[in-house]
Image (cartoon, rainbow, N blue to C red; front, side):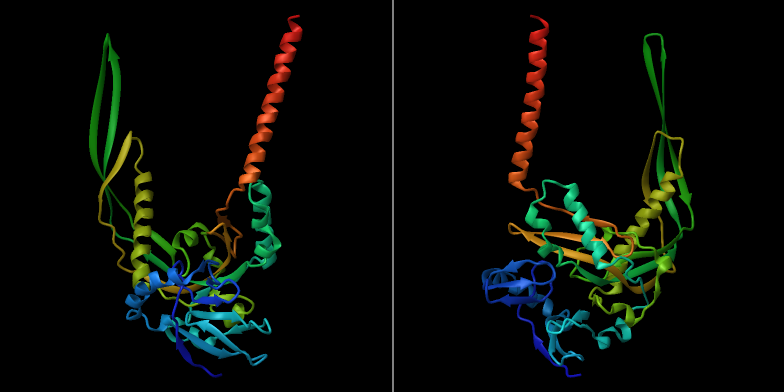
Length: 353
């Protein structure tokens, strides 16, 4: 397999994926998020990418790989580990990119098919009659892609606990007077909490809030990593180091433990956490690939992202509202209200004649 590298001049300002020049539109298009940019947009972001070059030279390169089926050269960015040949449409798995420290320990195979994802999106359109018709067209739906996204999973048994201010308020009346007694208590609640596999997105290409929204995954179904599961899907390797992901995961775990301990303190009018000494002395990490279906649709200069958990089928996303449909709906409701009001008025007049 031949391999060479060339410098990437431009990356998507939104998701950091490579941009491709479109001769027809004379714009640069991102195949990941669907956004298009003019040359002036890229120039404005060029300085940003120059500053990041020293941090990760590898992320600023394309690689050329030869398709084993038709012999065509496949161009990918250096984080892509599974893709498709644009000529013969056969899947191409680049094993060398998932070796060494980039080889995942576990993965959750796709449980939902691409047809399941398309059907789920169609149902969203049916439930939202104000969505533009073109938004849920077959052309847009056909752009849904199944992607194995890199995640860091963190597990631990925590030490320590929280200190809270618990307030008890008693109110009573005597004669014409109202009395209030407020008692404050300092309560310390400690426990060793076991937390398994808190996920954190390991790729800069994907929005963290979106990835958090499609949780949870059933990690009891996780299997040891195997290349065979990648066939027919896209896949990425991580470009967020575990140390950076760990800081975010620790904050999530700490917040979860705080809420669990706080909810165990009952019988008071208010409970406020004043401090904590929660630590994670034995934090374990795993590198995993998790299944996600993604669809990015650009509508009137705005990109709308839909994501579906490839295991559970949980779908999240936002959508535009068709102005014409909204006006028609408003007028229809107004006509119905007018008709009912007129009928009531007519009946009232008739009954009093």
